[in-house]
Image (cartoon, rainbow, N blue to C red; front, side):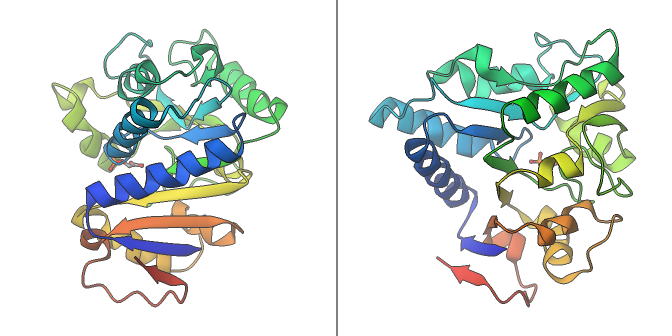
Length: 251
Ligand code: PGA
């Protein structure tokens, strides 16, 4: 893992967008793994600005999102399909038919998990996966205790995740309690991973990732077993916590 330290959320977003754009230009048919949540919104905004200014094209790109809430259809404004359309896909030249997100309203959710896992495999896997991290160390919706061997599966969200995501809903009891998520093994099969970490609320999680042990009680720790992970973290997330990780690359 290498860590790139940036000043703030804006710089993290710009740096992450540059990173992604470089890969898309190198490989226009890239398979991108995408994330939702507060963290990547600025990155997606930078990608849109770049698309408008420089014409970077996404026509041949295929995307796979990490997760979707169970029970929400794509036109529900809290679904991750709606989020992706409105934060990114509608504003770049993405072919929507090449954008993939698990269905939140599948008739058979287990079958949907299998379909999604197979679909990723059929496309030859993900080239670059963008990740955020939960305060509890989750990646995707893989909550603490999830097996490192897990494939795309159904999860019951942790109370802390429901609490953290309530800010996007009118009321906390509107937050779905279950979701479909790529598994940890699914994520780990990605050829490259870009983890974005911003803000003081994430500093304990980042510290634990960099300094703690690799085990299933802290899902993100598995990333230390991956050969190609870049972390872009801002000063608030790194804060005054001493990072012992040797490959720190200051910007
Ligand atoms: P956030 O969520 O970007 O909204 O902080 C990250 C996550 O829970 O993975």
